[in-house]
Length: 54
Image (cartoon, rainbow, N blue to C red; front, top):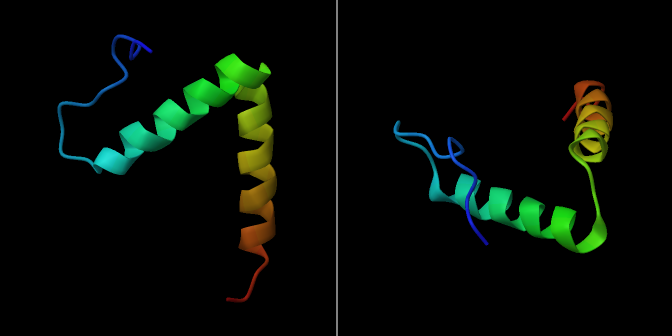
C-alpha cells in the first residue's frame, strides 16, 4: 500500500504513528470505514476521557 504524499513528517516523531496510520488505511480499504467515522469515535473517546477522574 502506497503512503499518501505529504503524510510523513520531516520532524522527529514516533514510528508508531506510521504504524497506526497504516492500520487505519487498511481498515478504510478493507471495511469501507471513513475519516468521519474515525473522527466520531475519537470525539466520543475524548468526551468520555474528559470526564474520567483517573
